[in-house]
Structures are given as C-alpha cells and as structure tokens.
Image (cartoon, rainbow, N blue to C red; front, side, top):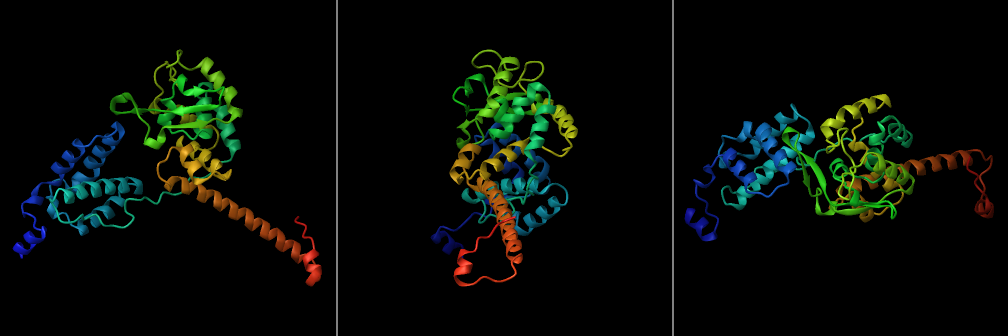
Length: 337
C-alpha cells in the first residue's frame, strides 16, 4: 500500500501533520504580506475563535466533523459575519497545509460557510440624509455628503487630502486610506483593493458645501487633510463615534451606521440605471458580488413599479362594462388613474 502511494506520488509521512495548528497558523500569518488592518483581523480571529478550539491540536487530527461542530458552537456565541470570517481564515490556513503536503485534504468543506447571509440594510429616504446633514456639526457636513454621494468608505474619506479634490472639474481621486490600529494610532494605507484606486465624479449640487468645508475646516497646504478632528489631528472613527451617536439619535435613526450612507449612495446609483461595470468602478470593487447586490435592489424596486402599473391596468379594465373585441380592443385607450 505504502509502496503504491510512493509510486503514485501520493505518499505522505505520518509525521508531516503532527505540527500544532496554533504554531502553524501563527507562522502562516507571519509569512504573509498583509495590510495592517487585515493582519490585526487575522490575529484577532485566531486568538479569539480558532486557537481555543484547534490551537493545541495537530493539523492531521482536525477533521471535517470537528469543523462543523466548531462552527455550530461559534454561531451560538457570536454573529454570523464573524464566524464566516473565522471560517474563511481556517479554510485558507488548512488549504496551505494541503499545499505544503502536511495533510491530505482540507477539512473545511461546508458549502457557503464563508459567505455570511447578512440582512439587507433598510433604505432610508433622502429627506433623512438632509436631516442628518443639518443636524451634524458643521465641520462634518461634507463628510456625510461625500460618504453618501461619492460612495466612499470611512478610511477613504479620512484619508483624502486637498490635492485629491478637483472641485472645478467636479471629481475626486481615491489613492489612499487612513487606518486605525491599536492604541489609537493611525497609519496611511493603500485602498482596500487595486480597484479602490479610482476617480469619482461629485454631484454638482454638493460642491458649494465642499468649498465651504475646505475654507473653514481642512488642513492648509496642498497635502493638507480634508477631514480633521476638532483639535486639528487626523479624524478617527473612535473620536467621531460620540458625535455620530448623538446625530443619529436626534434624527430618529439610532441604529444607523455611518457605513450605511455609502449603502444609500450605491443604491441610488444603481437606480439610475448604471451598468454593473459602472457601479463597480464607482464603488471601488474588484468583484461583481457587491455591485450585483445593489443592482438586485434596483430590480426589486422596478418590480414594485411594474406591479403598481399592473394594478392600475387591472383597475382600469375592471371599470369597463363590456369586453372590447377585435378592432375595438386594438383601438381602445387605457387611461391609468
């Protein structure tokens, strides 16, 4: 048996998979060139979710049933999104172990486990966005406007510098992002993906507000930050949180996340009839998955419109006393109420 496996190139030393998952996973992260935020995420997932269950176990001893039990236990403790991220990391680490010929097959084989079924966020009316703009302190109004109507992520917004804005041409360039790491430290980073480097057109209606912001609140100089904190330093999400909490409560939307503003802008962009490629470009996505979500939302709205039209047609047809036929039917004009 062993001889046949050697001849086929399938033989694997029984000692190969004896390395512990904890040691291998830690080395796996060390060996990769990762963005600061990604490395922090991976180390947090390993420490809090994977190491307690698998850290002291040998790679070869982790079976598919173990992974299923671990996932079920985690789903009862933390949110589905966190479990999906932890599962994706586990699957990647074990996939590398397969490539390194430490184990024969990847025990992470649960279909769809790495794709959380996140509920669609409620679409708030634009009137509420206007209310937020008038309620939030003046130094943050442009932040809300660009977060909504330029579809920028938080890190992209606070990473903007004056040189990235061309208000005469009505565009901005996304070339970097600001990332917060432990201890309140902030670092300049590249966008989330290569597609994140992009040029975004700005609605003309919000440009006057942006000009006022640059004059009153942005750092001076070509490389000055567009958005800063009250003391002039980089604007941190942790420092902005209290302001956002007060604002969203004041407008009656206590569960609204700042990131939901981007969701609103993306949905509005999809409703204009933008193509999948156009949405991906504006949103800064390299895959079609997220863009398809917003196109789907737009299609759902179109179905609502079609249903309303059908109901109007039904009411109009029910209002007639006779069923027209032949030429009469062809010439009859249906008036929608």
